[in-house]
Length: 124
Image (cartoon, rainbow, N blue to C red; front, side, top):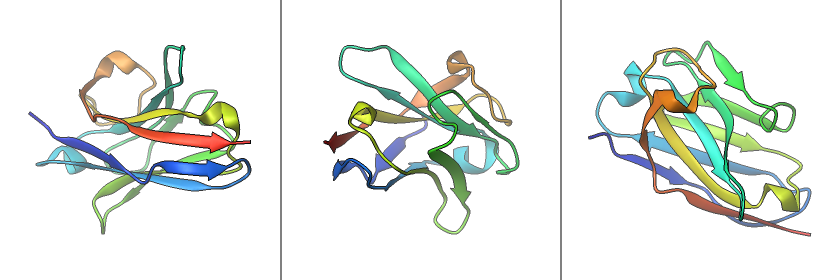
């Protein structure tokens, strides 16, 4: 069982930036694609972005394009989500997940190992 852990969440003000990080146990970081999702209060889970195992392929949904950037830090062995110009509607629990694929995908059903999630709250 792959252990996935998110970090970097918290309370920020509208317009601020925040960087989330995700680590995965074992060989998951090197062998599989990883991605970020979020669930806002009262809403379904939404795909943000994913990145391939080599960091060369990325895929982002409507939420992730523009203000959010996904990247792999091979020094820290983390997959990071840089979020800029945050808005109150970005308030959500953010989840990191490990894919069963090696390349980036927008298909949530391809992600088999999930973290517990981390809260991001954006105040107006």
